[in-house]
Image (tube, rainbow, N blue to C red; front, side):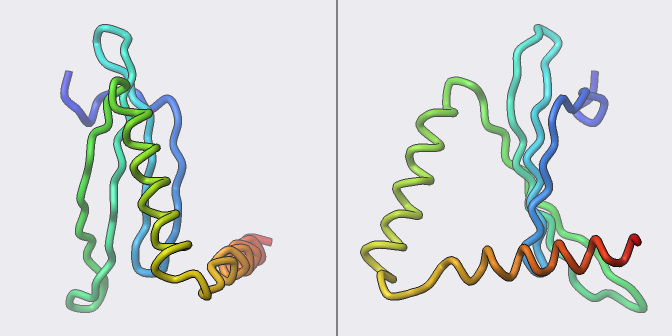
Length: 106
């Protein structure tokens, strides 16, 4: 069974400006699970847009190490490198973008 044919058991999309991140949980033939993290970037091409994708596979034996390392790296930037910066502004902007997106469908 090819990768594209794997059943997605969970999917979360995170919009981030010109980038979108996808977190997908998939299963193997042996009923094991892994996560794919895909970064998709949009860029102008001709009359429209093209997308560039980068994919990473994260296996269960690495989940805890990955989450710990990511949290430590983010905490380091927030507390050591940019302690004065207000990171909450991004969450407020994201909520506003989601609200605007919802209005388009009404």
